[in-house]
Image (cartoon, rainbow, N blue to C red; front, side, top):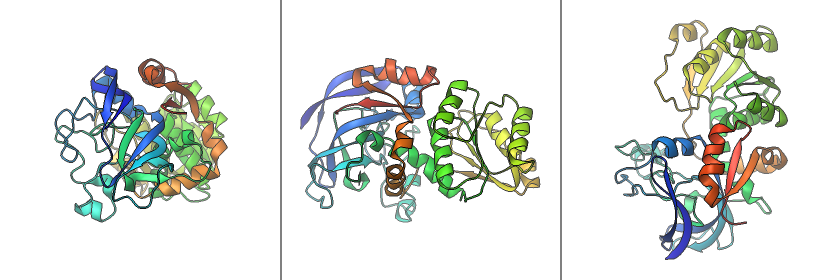
Length: 360
């Protein structure tokens, strides 16, 4: 048992900074000295509304709030369980924060992101930080299979980006973005930005990112996204897409915003035979214009989380270290989590990825 400093969420707008006991790792676990933990949109919703937070015992972890939040993290292994053979104390890892049974048909087929038992009856999410203790503490125990070894000299701050970049990469790969494709991203938050970067790395021709925030579009421009646009109506979006693609439309459109106008605009932006892929979680069920999609021979896809992709994403980030480094806009301390982290990310559109530093 080890005593550590941690953020603990009790419910909506109730995060406290406490000392917590972290047990020794189970036989199939490793204990990680957390270096950095990123903050994302789901953390904001967890804090503001209690979204996805376990309020009753989770079916797999049997844990519930109060819990240590955080699911985008990296660090150094400090202890290993008795059954762990492929990792060593001192190894630097990025954590895949999945909670899965490993036994249901989806898990056995490799789709552990769709585990049949991962979502609680209270809609608690199958991720560390929501239904089990996560990375906003000095140490955290994780299943060894979900601790991914980082290359030599790979910076641990970049290690904390592997999780959100994996969300984007899974969507891009599932959509089969190919060299020469024209791509639209609706929403220039962190996932939208990472989706644009992965699309460009994948060889897309025109990569267009649309957002209402000039600050976010400026950041997209700094990251090298080719066409940051601010289309404040369906008409202006259609005009921009028509101009950039010479009246053809886009091959793939990603909805990374999760509101009705962005989904409607994504469908309208498609060329014949194009695809819309929804990554964002919608707060309210959207209306899908099936008639418009049908007449274009279009497809509507979804991409939830990730599976079997972390090691590939680590290689992508490793190849483009300086590019992804620019997406980190601020580093803060644990006691600044709410004021300089969650609230800053919610209000300050200049922020992309804010990291909480637990250890240097």
